[in-house]
Length: 467
Image: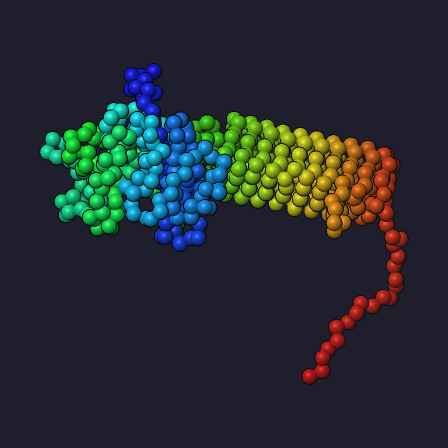
């Protein structure tokens, strides 16, 4: 362990996440920090990163939509603090001061800055001496919207000037404040008490503590982010979409390094977690939601939606199929245009074909339903063939009933299985049958009305209206 890390481990650090802003530019009834990025709220990304740093306490300052935010994160180990009026970031941090007693320093994060990584924040902490004020900075060609880092002739940081308060000379500064700060708790209450709202926005800027600290000759240590995109925040739907693409590229780049092959990384989205084995392939416009796990050599076709699914080795999901809450066995083939619904377990080398829907059913190894079929609340054995247009009639309008089909059964096309019903091993059901009773093993079972022909029968003719 490096010396810097040893020192950091001895420092008691709390983390405060400022999440009280109104977010009016989002044009949404939901609080800004509950807007989704990669399938989960902005604030959840920040809290995940904060927890990875193992702070003594994790604090969140809330204001706008406080009840909704607290309700969403009710199971999280968070201390909540309320900013009663929206009077700026300095005032927001004041709200959390009572919870910081006993900490050496506090790391300040923001609930609408979701792309920060734990590695970057660990480095920020390690490079900031225990009693110093730590700043996060970057050098940007386009500094519009950022506060500028003001240095003296010796290069020492003297202040942060918010853009609306910058002079013409300060506007030209390219070194900017990214917002995250490390503050010594022993000095913090005095600094916050000295804040003034004498600025363009009439707010108590947390950034003004830099000038206050320097006036008392306190150390200020800037830490330059190597990737400034980590510190991008969200103020409106356009910025949220921009961060979404950055987030997706980051996730997919990580998976590509691990071996995932992508036809077009710009057209695959992950809203959750994706785990892949070796030599997996994805075509464009694939959406992964929740927890998705792929074995080795899995191929996913264009336009597929995968939600909370596990797919075995050598399986293939053909284009425009939707799989949710299911397990797909090794070497299975799904689609195209198939839907596999929650509670389904598709066996090894099974086939679920085009316009086939499976719901809460077990399909045995090597079984096939290749065309225009509905299978619901069923147990199907191995080596079964379900013909085109066949359905299990599992719902009587009140209750769901089960269909059980044994091994090596052949179900002819356009068969209706009226549950509850069972079909014995090796049975054959003739096409067009309506099965209302259990089918014995072996042999042929069919249910058909006698066919008859009526000679000279005339189709109804459409009457021609007189004008």
